[in-house]
Image (cartoon, rainbow, N blue to C red; front, side, top):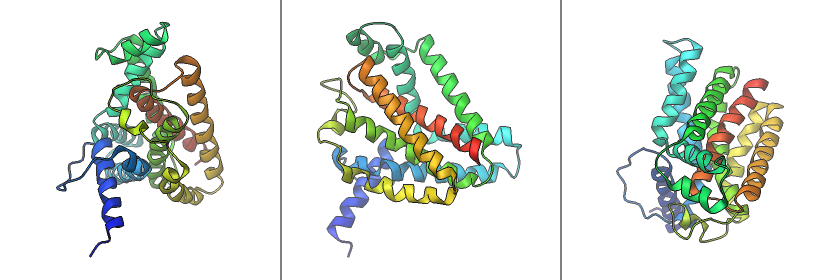
Length: 248
């Protein structure tokens, strides 16, 4: 029989996978935001592995440019554009030049403005360029970077308060994000050693990107929302692909 602890862990992993992706599983899960968020990096590995596998298949038919574009499309299909939607809304609000309260209202508007469209085009373009530039250890990079980018959301949750009284991401802030929440990420990050010296640049870039975004959000809003968490995930993913492509 499976122990209660393992059952709970599997439940939380399935919950995280269902929340962060469009994958449908024939299992019944209990959604506990506090418990499942620690599995965000593991979900990133699963999504990255699927994309990396598709990448290998695409290479049998298409040239690298087309393969890289299709990889980006697969990422979007696997997430349902969840974080891209947040990126567009966050860009509209943050770069509106409006007050904090007004910026938060703009983010809630389902319509996308010029800044949102530009942000989407830039980030998707950077992601495509980064994936295109991946050479050696391409499969490993495609698996690792999504794990890092989803961990960036945990860092945002740890160091900034939630802006709204209600919202999709509100439950994730009910309990403080402690160091134990990052244990699955630390396990995944150990595999970055397989990148050789590039692992140093990857981890350093990750820290710099996360801290830069946390400081920017703190200065601009003083808090964080579900949309800005999504933007953090997408931007860190695109930039980390760019960094690894320059080194491998």
